[in-house]
Image 1 (cartoon, rainbow, N blue to C red):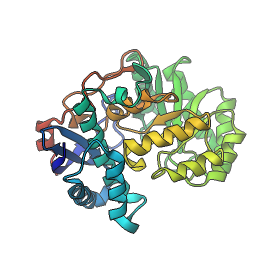
Image 2 (tube, rainbow, N blue to C red; image 1 turned 180 degrees about the horizontal axis):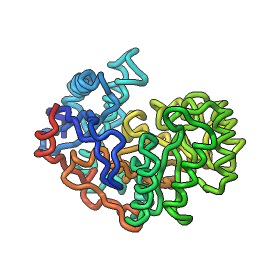
Image 3 (spheres, rainbow, N blue to C red; image 1 turned 90 degrees about the vertical axis):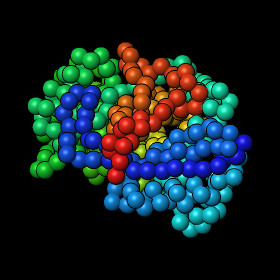
Length: 365
């Protein structure tokens, strides 16, 4: 079996928010690069990549150029393909657009491998469990009005979610008191039994994170974790916050490739490692990072794309929970649906996903 052809495209997906109904910016579009990688015996592997922003067409071109290099290769030899692409990129890596483009190819290769062997991806990767916890994400963004965020939080509770994530690092003139009040009111809205995460998206300095984090603890909000509290590669600063708070600190979604995670782990910067399949360079790298975290006795969680990450977090022994963010859902015919706060492992071979041709035409860039 050899790789025979590829097809790529760009879609501009709507920025709606189906979980609770309040979009931070309903007029925005999410540019996504999609990939179909086909073998000479008719197996088709699917991949996606994004974070390109104004460079999304450049990202697609990178997928096309790297994809052309793998034609004729054995799709089951994912490490050999990765080595060839790294060598071809020379000094264009090891991060940025190179890894984002490589991730789409790597995911498509694993999809082909699962389909060729007749196994869902999570079983191929080890089959750690048959279901995994998931949390609602993207419904409680900082750009919502406070009353909208509180209403959305109540809707998530009514829908039966057991975990959800809010955002602090509020826009405009803010203060520790305002940040804490937002957290307190959302906690009241979701109730005392829901796990409540909080994402800062690198908006605080370390001393602010310690100050506000302690105030949130003193207010009895009870966060499951505090995420990306300061600049992602300020490993000593992150470690300072993690040591000062009883609330677990999560981080890692902004890191590219494998090596930065070693620096993060060695510095004891976080209590929970968050791995992004696109920035990590695909499934192959994702699994290596998860294994490294396991060696440090640290759980891993995912960033975005639950339809792919359900396989990864569910496969590894230290997988904790899957971020249920529906940003890419219009791209697929069907996606995993949570039930009682859990995602059942897919049963179809490979990723178990199919592109929705009508959506691709509708949202084509």
